Image (cartoon, helix red, strand yellow):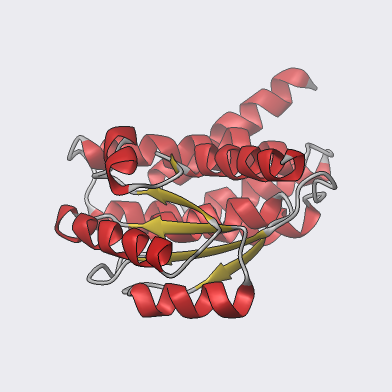
Length: 217
């Protein structure tokens, strides 16, 4: 069983890297049929595959069309797996997420939002090209515990800094985290963010840690 399980998880990861949605669906169905845990399939299969896609994109071995095909493969698999994931009773909270103004890319943001939802967070997705006003309105309306900003473009990174400053000046008490290809922990600290996540798995872990700290405060 272990070898079969490992083989299916590995094939699921490869199907994402290959951008093969049909294969991803087939493997997901086969894995669920023999009771492989849906969350493990997401983490060790889909997320591992998307992390490799991110590396290929970063190294310019993959371009946007390949990334979009991989994201579609993951999305189709998630339709099967997500309803079967047991929510973590120890994790709860509201997270507002959006891609900052000037950037219309949503692949990374969507993956992060899905992974956060899968463990029990209530995610308010503002979409793309979101400015300070959009985040401020969500903070007032939705009262999030965490605000997550995404940017895939170097040209829009500075907009993150403006939004973070604006949120702080408006008295926003939510923790602010950022993520995206051109970012790193040093930039996050410079911009005044509470954390940086290079990928969806780290974002999930970071959000959980911030909520645990809040509950102990």
